[in-house]
Structures are given as C-alpha cells and as structure tokens.
Amino acid sequence: MAKDSLPDSLELLLDTMCNTFGGIIFLAFSIALMLFSSQQFQNPEPEEEIDEQMIPILQQEIKNIKAETTFIEKKQDRQIKNVARMSQASQQKIQQIEDLNKKIRQVNEDTDVIKKENKELESKIKDTNIRENKNKQTAQQTKQRIKELEQKEKALKDEIKQLEKTEPNQTKVSFARITTTFARAYWFVVDNGKVYPLGTTGEGNQYIRTRRTGNRLNLILIQGIPIKNPVSNELKNFISSIDKNSNYCSFLVNPDSMKDFVTLRRYLREQKIRVNFSITDDYVLFYGGSGSGGASY
Image (tube, rainbow, N blue to C red; front, top):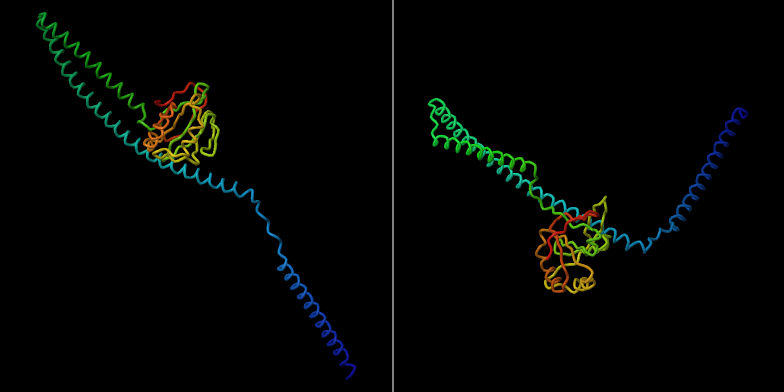
C-alpha cells in the first residue's frame, strides 16, 4: 500500500513546487513592471519648445488669412449686388426691345396702308389713262414716303440687333495700365473708409497683397489707413513721403467709398498732387498695352 501511494506524493510535491515558483516569477515581473511605469511617470520626456521667432510670423500669417477671407467675402457680396443690377438692366433692355417692336408693327401697318393707296392710285391711272401732273406728284410723294418708312423700319431693326448684342451696363471700368507712360503713377485703393497704398512698382506690401496671372495683377486688400475728416497725421505723414514732382496719385475707388475719396482728394489738391481715379469694385491692374486711365482732376 505504501508503494502504491509513493508516486502520488511525488506528483503532488512537484505540482506544489511548480505553482510556488510560477507565483514567485509572476510577482517579480509585476513588481518590475510597476517600477518601470513609475520611473516613466516621474521622468516624462521633455516637450518640444516652440521657437519664439515663429510666433510673430504665424500671427501675421493668421492675420493675412483672415484679411484675405474678409476681402473674398466682401467681393462675393458685391458680386451678388452686381448680379441684381444686371438683372434690372436686362429687364429694361427687354422693355426697350418690346417698345421698338411695337413701333415696327405700327410702321408696317402704315406702310401697308400707303402701299395699298399707291396701288389703287396706279391702277386708276392705268385704267383711266389719266396722266395728270397732280396724280404723278402724289404717286411720287407716296413712293418717297414708303422709302422713308422702310428706312426707318431698317434702322429700328438694326437698333434691336445692337441691343441684343450688348450686355447690360455694369460697374466695371477700364483701368489704367502699368506701362512706361504710367511708371510714375503711385497706386492706391479706397475701400470701406480706408486707403490702401500699393506704390509705383506693383509689388505687394503690408497694405496690399498682389497676385499676378498673365498680364493681370489682382490686388488683395490686407490693412488700410483710415480716412478721416480732417485727415489724420498718420495719413498726412504717408502722403508727405510721395514725391509730388515725380509722382501723381492714381486711385481705384469703390462706388460705396466716394465720400471718403472726395475727402482725401481735397487734401491732395491742397498739397498740389495730381490725382487720377477709376470707380470700380474689382481691383485689377493690367501690364502692357497702351491702356486708358480713369477720370482725372
């Protein structure tokens, strides 16, 4: 009986030893893991420091993006207004064409009546063989009248064709181009109570950002100088830097900012500086070509 129970005791002893060693190994691994985690928590990796020199650059870039977004939103609002004006102009053109068509119908009716009278008169002359001077004169006058009415009808039809070819009046105008002739023009934009200086070269600056596409120079307004009445010292100091003997001022003026432009122009006249301006809400300049300036004063 003792021989039969000996293997069972050895097997139980081996199981106990395996379980004990396994528990010790697991406990040691757990303690090591806890110590490693605690060390990582106490000594975190140092955070990357932000380069202080990049902060003003990033702030300026954010400011530029906001200004460009505001400019695009304002431009979209103006384009919506332009579409409304164009729609109204289209209705006026349709009414003009309808009125001209009415006149043409009336001319046709008058022509038919006169042709009928002329035909009856010629038939009477032919049938009766009467060649009185009075009848001849009347017939000639009638033919002349028919010719005049036909010419009037043709002129009215030509006018309709011209109306159909032309687009409704828009606020866009031809802008002065940057050429050797206009090399001394000092460019500005007047918009929303502020003036945005561009300069003489067409290069962008802190006031206006430029984007060139082909011969087009698109102007994006960034930061303007307020126009006050009387003119502020800030604006006076800027204008005093312009060489009035070598430069004249050329403005692109938003239609809604004419009152502000008049205030600024009055001061420029007092400083004996020549002024050229175009009224528009689409700020684009063109390179090359002879070009045509806006109104000057």
